[in-house]
Length: 229
Image (tube, rainbow, N blue to C red; front, side, top):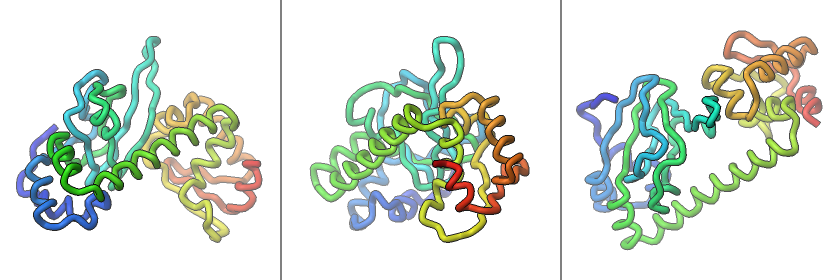
């Protein structure tokens, strides 16, 4: 990881949804407990077992949260991008990290210390409500993931992933760009890379998708959506 000079932390924090509504003095106090982390692709932000001294916000870039099994295989827990935060739960629990975090692309993050957050929570209950809401959303996503792994086929998981940002869209066709390589996404969906590639090939053979590297064309959204049922 590499230091980067000249970043206005207060300006960045003021644009973070979590801190919307806080006044300048509150933002200034949080900024004093915040440091920027400039990570190159492949950099490890923290390892499993490291102490959690705060949480991270992604200003830009992409981060993978994962752990390694006893057999040496990797399980990707989440793939996070701009505007997402991670590490709040273990910070509040006083537990070490249960996963490791790795930059999938050159990234700028903010690390906000536990101390400054606890101080602000005592002063402003609005921040506490926002953090509880954020953690509740993450819990909901986790339950949805467990349901998907338990009840949905690999094909359904992949189709759901391709359409995840367009569930209510009226678009008849779409173009989706995978955020990272197929192996990482396969692990995120609890699939082997071979299974993931095989399903993409099957969907392509049926004319439901067009695969061009990381770009996935969906010529008929409703037809693909119906194939998920």
